[in-house]
Length: 93
Image 1 (tube, helix red, strand yellow):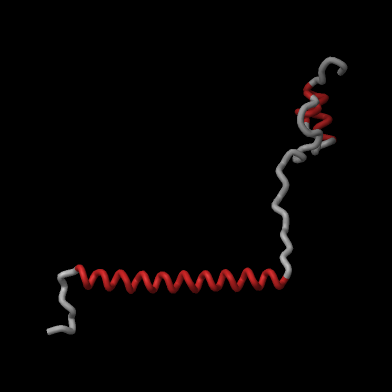
Image 2 (cartoon, rainbow, N blue to C red):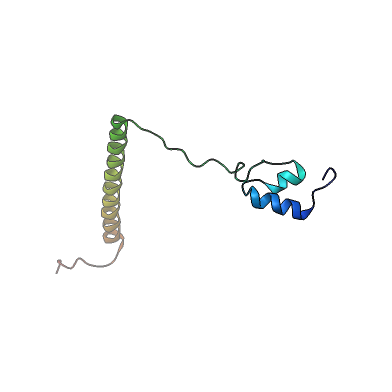
């Protein structure tokens, strides 16, 4: 074992120590345990209730402004169609 580890020895070690990274055992490179080199999972961010209320109010205000903009765009589009189109108004006879 001083020069190399036989495959059956590596297999036995891996069976007894399933968290051991056999690549690390063979080469000495990388992390000793499996999964140590994985990126950290996203962390939870804590926001105070007052700050959360401000964020919610801003989001609601933006959503309201988006709805208003859509309504204004619809009005402008309808007005543009009537001005540029050759169609007569249905009520005008």
